[in-house]
Image (cartoon, rainbow, N blue to C red; front, side):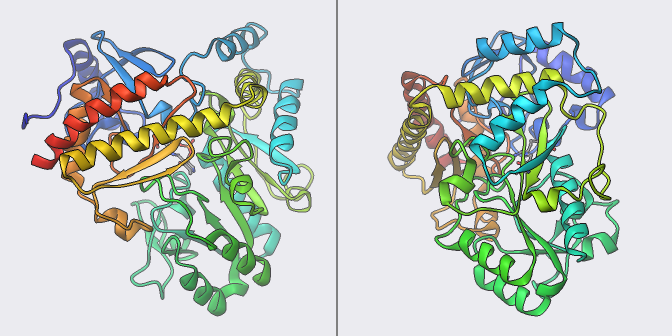
Length: 437
Ligand code: KE4
């Protein structure tokens, strides 16, 4: 097993040297720097279907898929054509246009609990706005979130669990004021008792509970039986709002996201990623009586130069129409997700390395941990060195998974079964290398 980390080709290395002078860590989003897995990142030249090619003409089978948006594969011809023709009519107007109405109608058709909504330009903007709106609507200051769940980088969410669940949060990043952090309480995911205890003590000060209904930012961890239903019951009883952050799961785990898959309706939901088909789009929305508080209908201010951008709307509309239009799409995603899960499971057991693999539809989580993995504390105990060795072993074999043990793997409709089988064969060897790490 080669001890040295995989190194990118000459052209990637040259570009990264320039990037390091221009961007913090050489990247425009931290995870892309490969710091959790070692080595330096490749630079992408182009992508198509399930494949990426780097500037040194190496091909990779992609299971990052832009962190979720590319559910139809990269450069889907219909999506590309929709973007091209929208851009040719003007990339952005800063004015009303039918594209935003058409995409909102598509969202409402798939998620009828999103009665009224607002487009923004990222998942962070969506959750930040939803937090402000929840506080305004309830007149309460506190937000509950869960350890290991990520809701973007707005201050109220960059909070780590206070020392013991008895206190409110402490900043998880310099620059987040203590006061802001102290209004956010972080509880263990899938621990309904901890939520019940907190609501008993502080329920009347809690504006909202934010949850990833399937956690996708600590690997992939599904909700425990009754967890989402319990959050629904406790929120309703205390007058707090339940907010499903479906930036990853929306249109991924079912046409109507996790709310459809698990049959639990939130008061507000946030969306992103797939909704923009790879272009910058976020959304928050839900019950009309809540959303009507948002300016200019109501006093809660929120605005955005590129909100409802016509080119991004066209991309998202092309994706949602294709997802909804082609019968059997979600069965196909389910089949391919299961094929990858079985291949990874078989490879790990043949390599004699204990792993826990979670899957919800076409999103998967892989933990170098004997299991169970139901929350952050268990996910955090997984073996990061082995993950890094596995990552490097796959990369040397032309397969790209998340450069962090705390992300999900994504399968798209463009991943052919033989491509997934090729991945499983390579994974078996990479597991052997990880076992030796
Ligand atoms: P953005 O601001 O990155 O568009 O969305 C923030 C966000 C909100 N909610 C959930 C559940 C999310 O997963 C995200 C962003 N996801 C990360 C990785 N899973 C994006 C990748 C990155 O940070 O580069």
